[in-house]
Length: 421
Ligand SMILES: *Cc1c(COP(=O)(O)O)cnc(C)c1O
Image (cartoon, rainbow, N blue to C red):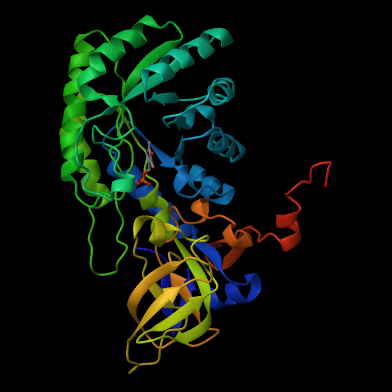
């Protein structure tokens, strides 16, 4: 459920008409709902209320300071995957002991920053990383709390670009080698193993792969404890999918996921950590864009929008579907017609949808891409010298620009000229 609904024929974000925001901010822009963000976070928090837990929002999904502060105020920890994300989390006021650091390529600078600013744990993904973190921690005179990300070799049954839990993926260490690796960690004085980490992929629409993975993590917990390791936390990653097509899909609910965790791991006496990103932010955001032209081609009509692949790359990158709806509800009795919906960028890949059945639309009409809150703004670029589009946050009947649109001058002036030009 989200808070982007029609009222008297106009699309609202909470209590604000989307068209009013468009008139003030200009198009295209991203628009987030505070009520939806907090609702989704709380669903996870409640799903794990049966035991000690921490929900660490995977901020790579949407990392605007206002979004982080909104979630942190609900009690969210953060899952970060870069020094930049760590700095953003700290800037949003998240205490270091609520930040977990994931990612396969942490650099020494990133390790140092997190160890000096405070960190709940590093989720380690390889043996060279382990040796490096040990050296850095010893050099700084501290002990780094760590988990090892194990790759359980289960098929998450999701898009190949976002599946991470098969043995051929670059993530984690094979679960079959976990005992050896934890034995090595125990010998490194700069590291202290506090738990186990797993994350099998994103946009999972079936709980079964989770069950298989969590069962393996449960067995590993027993084995590692028998080996003498003090396993206190289980970080189970993120990945729960969201419905991108209204009325068609019913991915599992956070409560079912929480119950599954309890069934498989509830008896381990561990603190459960999860790292949801997409399900928190995805349906909490839309991208609003305007029809620039309606162009009739041979046998097909194109809706050419002012938003493009640089603003929302998911359709081009993951063949992703986004529902696209008119901001002014069409009059009753209209007939759907097929459009190819495209942006102005000079690539055929700049196509949001082919032969999409839409109500009739005309130049100047506004449309909203639903479910664009996660992996939308954060993946945008200035390709074709299109400045990054603004982000706006709604809270009940108020809205605020939370990242302004740069002017052309601001965009150009980030370039610097060498002395010889
Ligand atoms: C991407 C990622 C997540 C979040 O995945 P979602 O599908 O957005 O929930 C969590 N943990 C790790 C390690 C990730 O890489």
